[in-house]
Image (cartoon, rainbow, N blue to C red; front, side):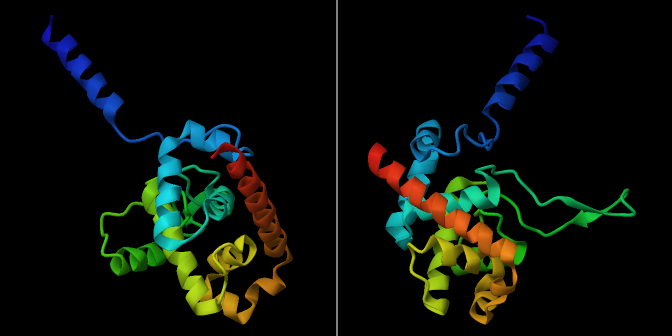
Length: 192
């Protein structure tokens, strides 16, 4: 075997072991299908449910809305004059679409500097942490997908000020998150 061929084989083996599959699963309208395709999602959501008390269906509905279960998603670029890139709309990234500063707060509070936004277990745990803060600061039940989403989107202070009330588009999306949460809850009862 030539040296070049051996190097190519080793390179291909190493490349095949790299990074996890962050692509979204197929059939995002079926919670059972999602968890069947991605068993690590099920383990992550269950761990968050045990640790933080946030039901799986609420986590899944918010994650669907934020990233459609795409671990590598970022906000779109902004352009000046339609051509010159000026950066991204925000620093939101990963499954939970967490902003840099909020993610750093989570890492500091949970003493987990190695947590990554493109890791489903870390992203799910982040949601559990954030939703519990929404419960403490704004009295939002952990199973209330609509209001948890509003606080997730507008922040704890924005939610307490009612900033979402002036955003009809956000109210519509929060209602969709709530409906998806209900749908996922019914499906999960069937497939557990």
